[in-house]
Length: 441
Image (cartoon, rainbow, N blue to C red; front, side, top):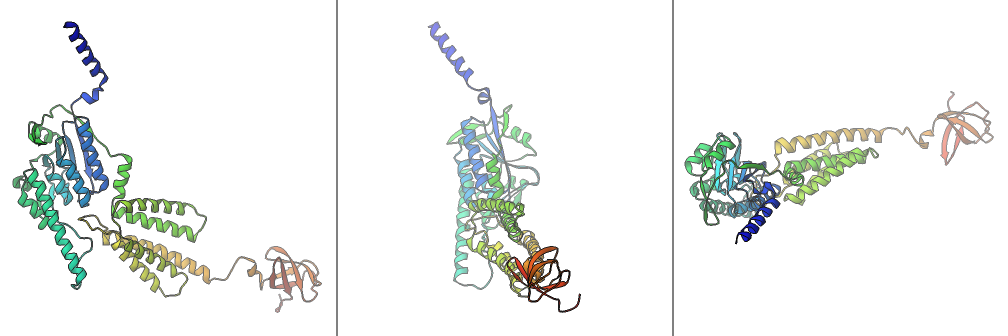
């Protein structure tokens, strides 16, 4: 019996020796979501939940500061949190942060929700990308019905989350239907969150011993002394997160078109063309992430085409002005958000300055190219006609002449002595025809 115990003890000791010390250490995983809620940040959170379940983390803390984002991405994040087999704590921080729109859904889906002083939460109303106004017609009524459906669905979604986490369902409904937003202290008083704490250390101290329900079982949080491991976004996820902004995608598109526009007007520069192609490639990746509109893109390209046509058609600036208008309209329509979303391009702070800058550059190019087209030719063989040169040899009728710093084989209709002035009348391949100048030189 004693030998069996020794063998068992040895086997356990060997197994423990083979297990990495980092896997045995008690730890808490931590991620930071700072920016819009998009497919990249959604994948980041879902991967963090899965990693925390696999590596035996005591909890997953999500430090959150977001203006909102896409509903589809929010749904995936909330679903991962509601079904997590590890306690999930959302902490809206630092002071001045907010959990607007989609951030409210994520916060309320946590097992423990906390906010730092000076933060806010709410304003979860669905936002339509189509806008409103104008005469009422069938299309306007269809949009109105769609907006109403989106609001009802979103309200039901947040109510279900609040009910699952035993939070204030009434306020959750107001956050969607009335775009209600509250401060940290108000959220605590209304039962929207569980804690108001100034920093991460205070958060860990406050939730020590708190009971949460995981898959129907009560779990007591025992986090004292646990190591905090920060999970960082991979480079690819960071890139996709950066490209998931409509503003970034629009700027990349405009930079790409400007680079190619410059390269086409000045062939051989290479750098503008290469930079433009890279920007367009990144913009294409962004368009695969974001729901963009082909109509908006075509209107935008039409604007560039009209501005280019101004070079060759004398329209007194009309085509140029129409091009600018098309670019503004195309930029406004570029992203078609059928879902609830807070992502978009600011008209006054992004669209107008960028289009104005593009227009200023295009105007400079148009003026420069226009002057070149209208000016007399200063290079090439055709420029020789009418020039005055000097006969290097006797022309009887063939000989050599010196014109524009070059020696040419020439023919004349009459004999011309050497060193006499001659005037070029025609260019015939590699020969020219000359005559005595009509005016004395």
